[in-house]
Amino acid sequence: MAMVGLFWITEGCVYVGAKPAGAAPGVRLTEGGLEILGQEQGRRAWAWDEVRGLDVRDVAVRSPARRLASMAFDSVVVLFTGDGEHPPAFTVLVETESDGTVEANVLAAVTGGIHTPDEYDLSRTLLTRLADGTTTVGELLGWRRDEPEDVAPTKEQRLALLRGWTAAASV
Image (cartoon, rainbow, N blue to C red):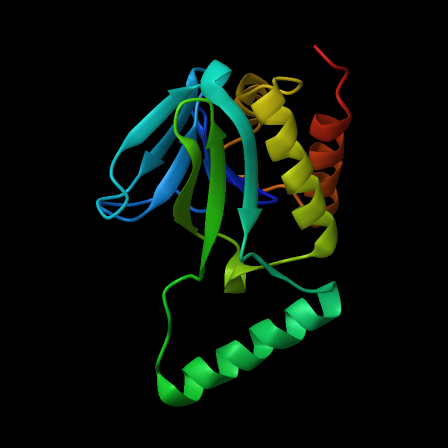
């Protein structure tokens, strides 16, 4: 598994945010469509031809310097208080033909839950391209299958992947 932008990519599917465990909330993207997961959210699914739009909100976005400062501060607070928090949540908006706009919560997978402006913007563009079919989940899965499991891409590699997936030729 690897985190690229807002996406947690496995060999078989892509999650927006963290891969949920147990009854935790999540959104799974497969080659066949999109599924909302989590006991509190109800299990709902749509094929890609039913999805009209995808977007996110409530994502923590900071410049790289501010992201580092926030993470350092949070680490100090946990060190002194022992009070760690669950990963922050953000919202995925799924616009469908039959159900209108449906909101789903997901948990951030990136450390501190904070993304840089570049990865956030590219991730939103990728969500749009997935919804309109100009990029497929298969492209993301193909990359993951070709990579060694124990190697995580660097920041530069993650941004390059997002740029490649968002600049792909239209179908």
